[in-house]
Image (cartoon, rainbow over the protein chains, first blue to last red):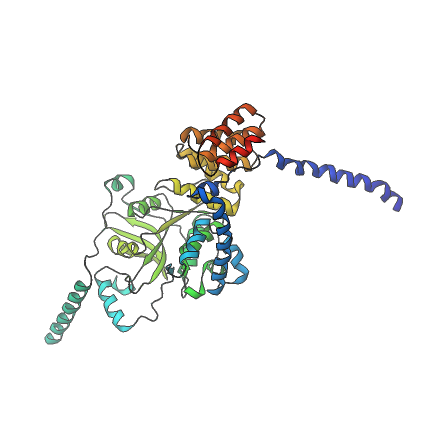
Length: 132
Length: 311
């Protein structure tokens, strides 16, 4: 049994090596150093390299901000990865002022209730379903 | 009895006066362009959009569930909440709405902030996700909903919104609430489909952002579609060239970069990429020519082009 293995195994190893060779060789067929589309999209190309560094730092900061806002740490990595460079920049600069779609009528004070009721009746707002 | 009704009439009169004093302008139907009536049918409702109700502050995840479903990607509200909801803000922010669409394999295209654009998408059976401020600017109540139908005659829209499926809203009231978000709206489309309301450089950016998340293989049909629909958009040809090069189709990539520089001869990045791809194809003379052009155009890529020529 051992002898068989000794004879067979070099062939097995060799076949694996040969089999994997084309797969390893192909990447060199693709041209190196191409300008990526994201680079070309970036409006101010003069500072493309500097921007790249800022971007990486921004992504870290956005990740920290999301965790601070209570996002699930296990999800944050993927959430940040799905943002475009431009979106990362926006989130980093003004996440606090961004509208956060939520819509809950809870907590609206009475005075506000009255005014919004009127504006609802005038067709300017859409807070209370019964005014439609 | 009579006295009471007079009293209540007086009350409502006072309230109306107050409101009129507080606000200038009124909810009138926003003007639709002349073309709209000829461009889209009088009325349309996308019947099959599934309704996902929101709980608490979850209109973002619920809206995403609806548009993803229509695009053939099923995701439950519960699955989407940890991906997009931000507990500290008790809501979901716009960039993350778009990012989550990308994670699920669809391309989010922000469409022009015009009611015509929304109607054009709905007429093409694409539900439109919108951001509204249902309340007033000083007491915002931000809300995501999905426009699924309209009626030009009655000037009404149909929305899946909050806990209400097929909510019927007048165009005037909708526009008043939508205008407060700067009329933000998007459609979520599978790669290869493009917004019915038109394409431009922003569409190319949307595809590029998608490509960064999902890879060139997945984004290739989208580039192909954009380059076919808008051949004069240099960035579309450029993006197509890069996606083709990444999927190892260098000959077609060279053609796409060639079209990009035909459209925009000052596009240094396209000349540079054209040169590098031609070099990989062993078309040395043409490659030299393209790299020389790239090196001649002033800008940040000049140095990079010179280095490549020296190799």
